[in-house]
Length: 418
Ligand SMILES: *Cc1c(COP(=O)(O)O)cnc(C)c1O
Image: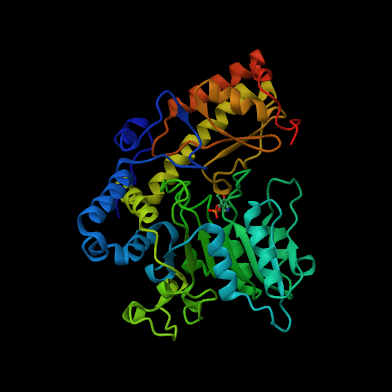
């Protein structure tokens, strides 16, 4: 066992120095697009050099042939999954399509409902609805929403109560993208297993931010993007987890890269699936979008792993919440993120009716947040490259903007013509 490293800025200064920090910006938007690390940059340059030097020989000389599998192995400690249960392929939403195509049985005699929540990132709902239609089912009767009483968070009891005998499969976000609520994955996974519901997780906002134990908890599947807390770059490769209990299933969407590597290059017309989650690959892995992920993931063990990142992330967001209370509350800002550290991910969601104007005003003041319609400003201090001083400066500048009402100089996006 290694001792977790401290959470202070001085201890983390060498890791901050591993990143390209945009000049004159306090970047608090790593939950939308994490920053470029020197290791990710170097990994891309290595691929380009191998391509230049070896041409097609890069598949062997550059190690591209199994880069997806080797990089998936680096995610083992972040996901709590065995390497064979992880595949790096395609994109978040496409991976959800692939998992539905592989796991959902539209002809099940009693269970034909898919359960989801209405406050998750809309792309998942688009995928589920189109998948149901493709399988001959009507989303109006086969997609069921879990209620959210406040429109920002979900209650474990409401989720569990929705696991009724007609539900076949449920899809939930690990961390809700607007409020930053971290759901109780252990309890929800256990309840789903107990009630015979297949449970799948969109981990886009939680992978790299909080530790996961997917396999021991018995989650059936998961999928995620790598450009938020994993810092792999715009549109970088997506990932998926398929529990070993499903490893004998044929892929719903089959392609030659999902064929067992032993047979792949014989190009037989019979599809003989690769072992494990790798069977859910479809086409040639996009090496240029895998390489930056491989480079970025080198940093995780160096800082002491996901436990150390989580500890520093919580220290930063706890400080941020305290500063909201002491400085912003009196200026009309409320908090949508749960206070309980066990119930929040890596971001804090501030609520203010003028959030859409506060966002550009804050950017002009050198702080990069993001805005979610209609009234949320999200701040995500990255444990890798943000500091407590960044948090203080962001809150002080936001307070100044609110006091001076300088945000009124920006157009109001909630009333702007479409
Ligand atoms: C960012 C995000 C996505 C992104 O989907 P892509 O297919 O990668 O564009 C999906 N789901 C959630 C919850 C996200 O936060």
